[in-house]
Amino acid sequence: MKRLVITGADRYEVRDSAPPEPADDEILIAPLRVGICATDLELIDGSMVYLRNGLTSLPLTPGHEWVGRVVGLGSSVRGFSLGNRVVGECSIGCGSCSQCAIGSYHLCPRRRETGILGLDGALTELMAFPARAAHIVSEAVALEDAALVEPTAIAYRAVGRLGDVRGRVVLIVGAGTVGYLASAVLSLVGGAEVAAVDVREANLERLRPLGVRQPRADEVFDFVLEAAGSPTSSSYAIGRLGPGGRLVTLGLSGTSTELRLDDVVINDQEILGAIGSPGVWDEVISLVESGTIRPSVLVTNTLELERFDEAIELVSRREHGTGKVLIAPNVI
Image (cartoon, rainbow, N blue to C red):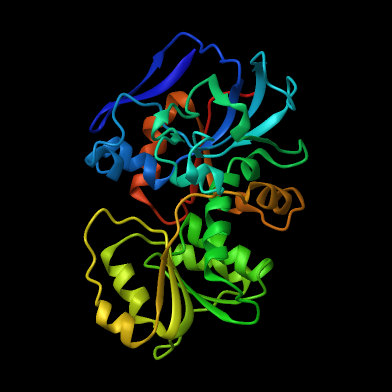
């Protein structure tokens, strides 16, 4: 079988490998569509924080946004059948520590993260995956929608960290994939009005059918969600946060950000991080299966695994009109 392997900074290749054998508690999956995200680019160029702090290492097969077909079952697996279409979580806890016991398996000290930490991802023709982290998705759902359940779950959980925003105005800083999906959750499910800023006009254009507007020059917000991941965007988000406001940030910049804690105290503000998507997958899959959320509107390109070079170039250039790029390792 063929799989993509990152071997070092700016070094990767599609190579022939022996097919994996699923363990007793795993399912064997043929990935159908895999999204490329900023984390994958950071793994390739070596800037990803887990590489810099030694938490993960190379070689590694990336790919944590995916949908696939079940083609094999471990001996103890129940609840899945051959042919099921499935998606899978990124963070997979040990299942026995104190964090896992309270449902915070994304913070498990022994966790694995699909295509990032301790578990190869979906940019391959066959993938062995823990059955307890997989979820069945209806055949009626378009592959492009199903492939983006994972970033939709990230956005959904971040929106939940904001609290009750029904009837309120939320500022989104950064309208890329997660920023768009958070805007969709807020406006279509959360009953909030959404304002957004982004350095790319194409991203803002994509938000207009959702009724998202730009913030006024002097406007401050009780709720801000930062999804851009840069020191500039973080400073901007904090600057737009009003007294008593709540900021949820999920963008990783890889650099230090100046934060005036005195201002946070004086203004009685809250700043919350949001990482992972624990406990929200059933809700998110229901939203996608019902058509309430359609993440496929972000997709502009789908390429075969052998064209991964071209896909990376598309994502890196960020030319006008290029949105989400998917890889199709299998067509079955």
